[in-house]
Image (cartoon, one colour):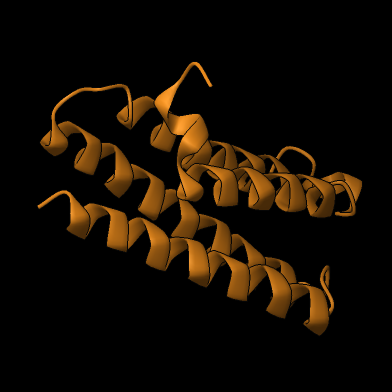
Length: 117
């Protein structure tokens, strides 16, 4: 593997969730295309991209900063899921699955941050 982020479990987990969010966003109503769907996909992309960018061999402090960005974006995705749930765009099973998987990812990011101390 050419890049460090490719070996990171948090990046792999974020990539898997990014795909799940992308597939879910395709099920949203057309009137959400440029609103909720777009926001959710951008936030999910941000999680993956910030993990990758932060792992480029910069300082630990810099990596932690990018992990903070990833963490905040993951929380943004979860908030989008709640909006989708409130608007009845997502069933309880799919919501619970995506919610729980994001909870795991958030814990992974938090633990990675702590390991850099």
